[in-house]
Length: 147
Image (cartoon, rainbow, N blue to C red; front, side, top):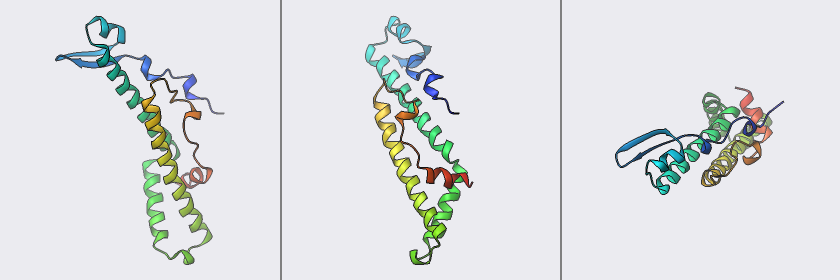
């Protein structure tokens, strides 16, 4: 059973902000307290946008590494490189499937990065919802599950 993390974790944009303004550090402040301290709205909006972008980046990274750890990714890369050294006609069906899944993996990560950019630009985006991200192909999940 999976639970949509967006139901459990509030968006980062509702949390506290850290800002440097006119040489003064405001750490762990709310937008309201920053405004009361005289921090301009543009600076507060920039801080919110930065915090949101970092939160979306962390979520994208978490989702990618949930499919394949960095070690698994290195193993897949090495295995794919070794297979790619063979002429395609000399590859087994299993080797062809591995190369195809690795190619799908690259395409999925590229789609994830593209979606990251879209979600990072939308401060109201629910980046924690599964529906907000490209679905990982089953062949990719199966490939990384070997490691």
